[in-house]
Amino acid sequence: WSHWVDESEKTGDLIGRATLGAAAGQVLACDTTSVNFYQLARSAIKARPDRKTIVTDTSNFPTDRYILQGLAKEFGLNLVMIENSSQSVEEPERITSEILTPYLNDDVALVTFQVIQYRSGARNDVKGLTELIHKCGALTLWDASHAVGSIALNYDGDSVDLAVGCTYKYGNGGPGAPGWLYVNKKIQNEVRVPIQGWFAQGDQFGMGPLFERAEGIRGFQIATPPVIGLRAVQTSFGMIEKATIQAIEAKAALGTELMIDLFEEWLKDLGFALGTPRISSHRGGHISLLHEDAFQISVAMRKISKVFPDFRNPNVIRVAISPLTTSFVEIWDGFDRIRNLVKSGDYKKIVINNARVL
Image 1 (tube, rainbow, N blue to C red):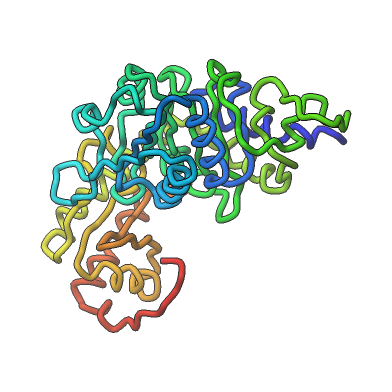
Image 2: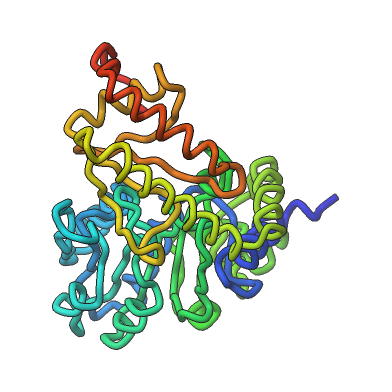
């Protein structure tokens, strides 16, 4: 019965194998993305004690930015924010080597970005940027929350140091599903997380007086595995592994291409603009539609059209294909409903409430 104690490692190996291009012993399914991000960001900073700068971007996901702000304040560090929030450029929010290079020097301890930008859907070049960051001696921390399960990743091959992500988006786990963390075997002895929980203790049930960290990825685990949530994640990522992440990525590319074609044909003349790169290898599984009435339209899409998008400030409607479950017919029908909703002006009848989730 005691196999439950290893569920975080077992599930982590599945996530790594199915989606991350990560060999066994480098991924844990545990806690939440925010907790894992804090743990790994802090450990990276402490692994470079003579360096005082963190680099990220203004379009990074809010929880990552907030945590970095707290760490910078706590340890007296310089947090550099690359300004990339303009929607008027050809590839909104995408970080390139040319953009990043001026910010790299021998004072940088950590550079952290999203794989897929949460708002625009722009896909960053993990391999190229990681190579560039390593040249200045800094560590990398990639947030794959909007990428895992929609595109193929190759963390081992790309020499990624650290990564985090969730399972509730393309992993189909839903809100509250466990997060995950990745620590490359090459640096597992170099970085140490701040919370020394008993699941990271070498002789865990010896109940000894002093903390002696377990070898390998278990040294990054805090506490008891969320077994019920992990079983759901195992089922979902088992389906991803069976379908293959390569086939899923191919369908995501076709699905978002169809969305862009329908935007051009149906929505462009209704006041919409595209906020996502057009090159398929430069985006993930969602696109962003920009409109001055985006918030009201997004609410009306749910209430009137029964199409379920996300709204993101200031003027973004995110629409996504979940490749395992979404058909091309559903994409066509969904965009047809958006067209009819906006063309008719019915969305203007919606009374806006103060819902916390948008």
